[in-house]
Amino acid sequence: MGKRNTIVFTSGCFDILHVGHLSTLEFAKAQGDILIVGMNSDESVSRLKPGRPVNKRPDRVKILMALEIVNCVIIFDQDTPLELIKIMKPDVIVKGGDYEAKDVVGYGLAEVRIAPYLPGYSTTRILEAINGQS
Image (tube, rainbow, N blue to C red; front, top):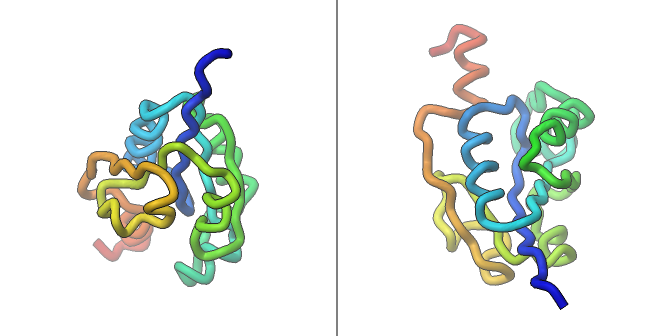
């Protein structure tokens, strides 16, 4: 039998996709063969970030799936992807450089790798710039 594919999981709201998101997704894809992206539902985003999302679920899914590096997008309604991670059992979990491995949801259930941090990129910062707040 052949080698089993390495499944990589990352997650987020991906409300307004920016270079920081892309960098993390590229790093995640480089960690294995199949990249599965867990994406917060609109309801989950609203609970975590009042007044958001700007882009609704169908648009966020379409944008992520347009990226060749993303193999699958799975929506979750909870505030964290813990239940999804338990079901999927990925080999690797990737989060952006603004996290420490021990703080990543799913730590202990899979190997956690942290993508390099790109300072200055955030959806909040983009929205502040649009609204003339920065």
